Image 1 (cartoon, helix red, strand yellow):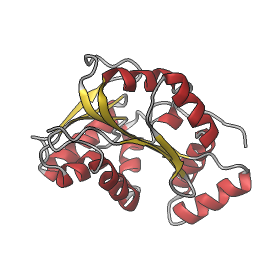
Image 2: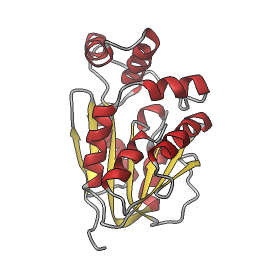
Image 3: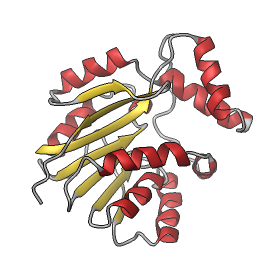
Length: 221
């Protein structure tokens, strides 16, 4: 199945609220648990493409010593995210910033861990983002990136939509279908990581609809 791009930014308030209402509890909890195992005891962590901040909130509960800088290119996603952060009582740990992950203002070698869930399928060309990940990450820093895996056929895509979004409304089903079609194959992911110069990574298919890139960070502090 050929890749078909979807919008890089979901920027209307209606879209942000609808996205936040979708039930990603299980996958978010699994992401948070895995990410929490990859960083140092006291960490300066970047979440790129944080959306409505559900994942950093989950991580903050597992890692109360971490400071999480969470960026997104959608002002309305961050608006909903800020409300979620405040409701969770996590303002002291989580900072939300309107920043393009392809051109970040942070210094080189700044973060102990970089995480990102489902940003790459939104990008026409993910290489600038991956190069920025390499730049802002400490040389011995941890990485945890996860995104959707593009199915081989339209039938496989439709089966995944029914399996995992069967109880959603028609618009939410279409969003998931479009995201699957905009995603990358594992081979494409491996090639882009190589081109970005990122090393020491484990790249694997982590579910029937996801791929994962991970690297354990140094446990020095």
